[in-house]
Length: 259
Ligand code: URA
Image (cartoon, rainbow, N blue to C red; front, top):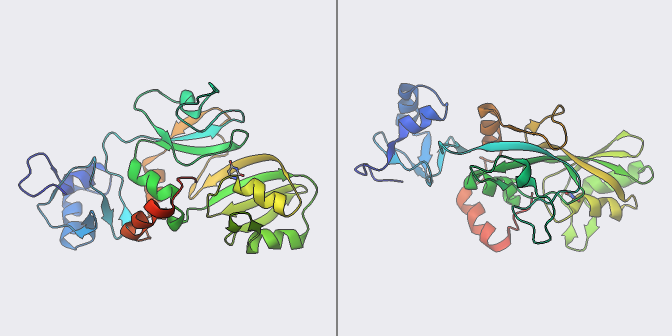
């Protein structure tokens, strides 16, 4: 947090008001009520912050405050890599978006996987969305070989043994014959494909249909749009409950940045 005397910092209530929380007066009330923290410390009236680096939360929920932050939702087509730069020269997801400001994918989808992918230049939100301790839900539709039995679906729900350990509880149901809807909270490498392999029903086609509260049935493959401020806030709220310090400490040990 910038110190109160730091002329470089901006007044906290101004930053909150710009983030759409309410009028400056309403934001002052939130600060006076001790509901606002900056970098985990309860804020006081008169505090100044640097929106580019300081982490601002209200009631424990992250508030995206960077004025230059952008948040895109892309419907990734198959045959595109989820990196900023591919040494093999394949098409990348960032090439489907405006070049400036530079954004990075939030987690990864496999080359052949389709569906919703977030890209942003907001590092804190990316950290929370990709770290397993925040457990953001990701929903997939998997067209699989054969027709999984109720017992197989129960295995997906309760956890299947993979070579990197048993999967956490998930939601699994049949959308139609051969089409599984699977919602997971983890983000291990090729997790859905490996879970379906483990129950004997390999994936033929995989589409991500929801990330936490964000979904979009109209967005066509290869197309993108900006998230609305409400969507950004609901995403931030969805990952606001865990203890950020704890999560950050763990992230340096275990986080692999997948989502
Ligand atoms: N699970 C997979 O197997 N692949 C993806 O791209 C995402 C989740």
